[in-house]
Length: 101
Image (cartoon, rainbow, N blue to C red; front, top):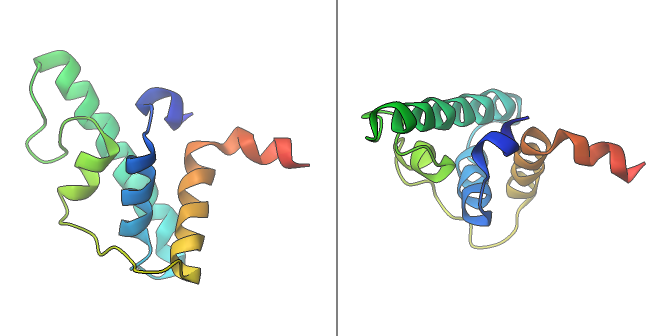
């Protein structure tokens, strides 16, 4: 479970969704997984060396996302942004899907 390893903030979730909403739907899960893995690598680097990873950031999801550039913030909730939020939440909290049944 990634969420237990990273302890994402609301800001992390929103910035990750912002990064995903500009890519085609079929790429969102892969990009989300890559960015979360990047944050985990950076967190490991920070724990072992005490310094941020030069490419992956400081171990937060926001840092991993922002290292790719600042993602565009939608002015309104769009279908793409809502779908991206769903992808992020499903990836971070897969166990929450079971409680809705």
